[in-house]
Image (cartoon, rainbow, N blue to C red; front, top):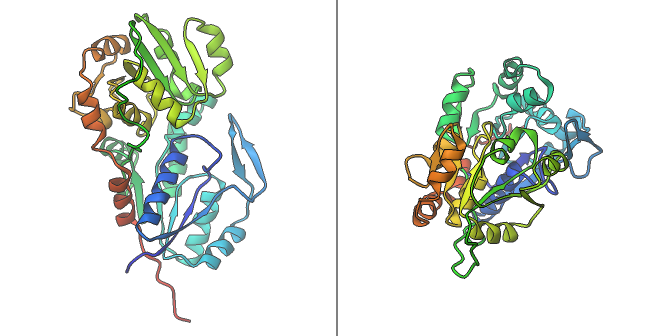
Length: 338
């Protein structure tokens, strides 16, 4: 059965700026290019409240019957529930009540994130994650390493859904000015879970740059005055900054993928990161970066990597390829003829 109309339910959507929104937006664009009608159910249009510890994200205050009515009115051929927030839980309850099959996705290591904020052990949160996803016909996961990790947490029906990069924005710009001293750059949300201090504390030659905003911006910029904090930048501005830098530093230990690594590689930047889920699959044995528990050593070694290796690795990731994986995992809804 061909799927012509799809509903995606997500608690993360524009104007939020994060990897989940970026992934869903690009997936929607590619699906529409394939001729599929995509209807989004997002916090827009609902009463919302700030997510505790993450106030930039507004979570919707909704009832299950409201979401069920919206989905019934659209009558999609398939349903994808992208996040484990209030909208996700409401859509899950609606799907179970109406006997609709649906897929889910594992975008964020929420138990580890929640633990870092509250000191509650991540192991206490995983039963809730298993409960949320257990009725899903497929849980879409961004890397093989993360699939193995989640199998160890007793999650089942795990399928690969990788990521892409917009090569029209993120590419090598030959006339971009370069500094005589090395530039090490981080791009992402400036927050506790990104482990940015592991980068800021390094004794490196040249300059450190942090691009992005978040709740830790004020404290980190005050604590590390030798680092250049540039705040929020557009994708085009980020691409220009990446072209001026020499090494992309990815200190996170909790990201499921790390889309910014691919964007940096597309601009010719080698990556320095810890050998954990995300970097292991994104970098692999491509030679496009250095993975080391000594992040400073990884940064210095990455300076020697020729530009063509990260560029070649980045071309393995396209939104067209990723979206075909996504589409093939969807489960059609069969409606009764009553």
